[in-house]
Amino acid sequence: MNANKERESVLSSEEAEMAKVAQRCIMHALDHSRAQKIRIIDESDPDNAPVLQVPPKALRLFADLLGAMSQRQPISLVPRGHELTTQEAAAMLNVSRPFVIKLIEDGKLECRKVGRHRRIEFQTLMHYKQMMKTESAEALQRLSDDAQALNMGY
Image (cartoon, one colour):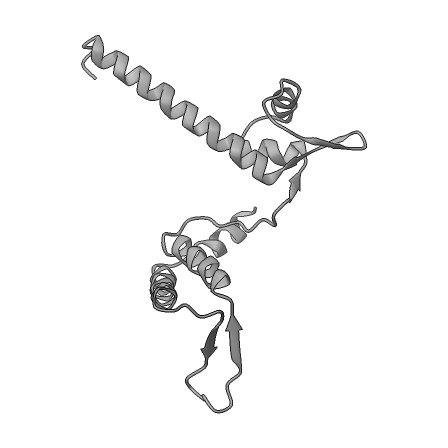
């Protein structure tokens, strides 16, 4: 992503606050409703306003999205079952493509072949990434525990 697009995607404090308020409104409506669908009406002209009917599951997704936006977190929407090339997977893991291929060959990362090309399901990659994050945190905790046991002073 170039620098201009990256700056455009950063929310201002006003936009983040607007997202926070919108998320709270949606969650409040969902918490007090057992409706199969929820209608959204433009109050500025209620007689002529189009009515938008939204399933509650979609509103929960919007609320989650708005929550992330209010905290100025980067957001990506990826369709279920989306597959990545080894180069795209490497970029997401911040490693080299040959490292991803080695992970696949060692059986640490699943893929499927499309002709000669490997494809990694996005969900599989995110699961692997979370596993590595957990393992790193556990290793760091063990090092910290060892340092404390040895009275290393930090």
